[in-house]
Each structure stands twice: as structure tokens, then as C-alpha cells.
Image (cartoon, rainbow, N blue to C red; front, side, top):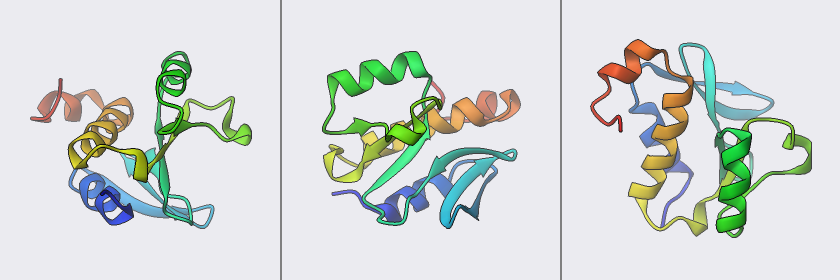
Length: 114
């Protein structure tokens, strides 16, 4: 089972990632752009996700993905840690969000890119 420590460990291993507390919670950034947040209860995390893709994710796996009403207009989705299959799935989700925020020079140099 994955937990918030896995989120932090995997995220901080991504190139040029830093952790910064904002809104009272840990956030993770690359080149100054936020790509992961870890809310207080640490049972879920939020990642970047284009709105058109987000609706498909939620429809396909509502037990795993959701969006709180106050974030409906944002390009973010929340992910329930307990619903993830394994650390590989967690890493894939975190890397995808990192790639959306990272500068092209980092994405091109990253060995885990698609």
C-alpha cells in the first residue's frame, strides 16, 4: 500500500524538484511551478491534469480520482492513495504531473519520459 511518504520520496527524486509549504500543506515544484500537493490528512494528493482528461479519469475510476468543488475550475485532480494499485502506478501519476510542469529541457533529459 502506498502512503504520503512514498509521494514525498518519489516526487523529491524527480529532477530539480523542491518542497515548499503553501496553504499549510506540502507542495512540490519544478522550476517554480507546482505539480503536486499533499493535503493535511495525507490520504490523498493532488496533481496537474488537463480538464478534458480529468473527467475521463473520474468517470473511469471514481474510487481513485475526484475533484473537490472548490477546485472544479482548476486543471488538477485528487488521487486517493488507498485506491492505487502499487508504487509503480503512483510513480507514473507523479511523473506525468512533473512532465506537465517541468521545462522542456528537463523533460527531454529525463530517462523516465514516455
